[in-house]
Amino acid sequence: MRTATSDELDRAAADLRRLVRSTAAAMERATVALEEADVALADEIVADSVRLDREREELARTAPGLQAPAVTVLAMIHALTELERLSLLVLAVARAVQRSYPHPIVPHELTPGFVEMGRIAVWLLELTAGTGEVRSLISLEDDLDDLRRILVDVRNRCDGSAVADVVLLSRLYERFADHAVLLGRLMKSAVPRSRATGTAA
Image (cartoon, rainbow, N blue to C red; front, top):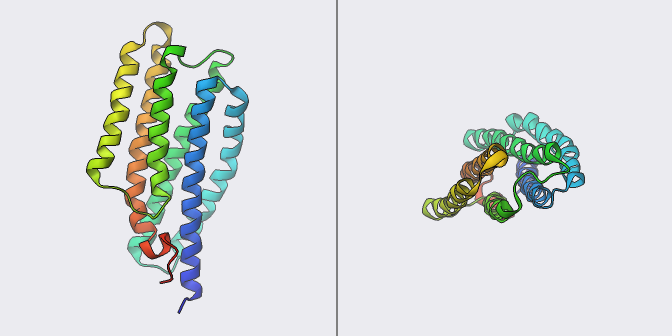
């Protein structure tokens, strides 16, 4: 029989997954803003971050009081910390676009590399919002290796005044992907399988 406690935990798990999906969508939009030098979109991302921060902070306040196994509560708290770090990385990309406007933040010829890095990083984060499971460590490392190969190629092809921005942005995407993988591991404990799949406990 389901109880008020299990319903509360289900809601918290659902809120966490929703915040993960929202953060992934924000990075996807930030990459579009970078690709198109779209300062209006960057402005929207920065404005939307206030709402997401408020929702994440509310969940962080309620998580310690959940009647759940300690490992679940601790994993959720740590997952929210990782989610905050991911959100800050999204903001850093959006603010770089704002700072560079009306000029593109990266040279046109390097933009496809950043679009691909963004695609991989967002996809890694989206994986964590599904069933709470992540693929094997080997598969995840393969995805990260793909991203890092693109990152090295982008840096090697860059010269002149754009070097600083290219190096900074490539590091932001690399860190985003790393934190996405770490969050995925935490989600396995923060969102038990029965709740990830919507099965009654």
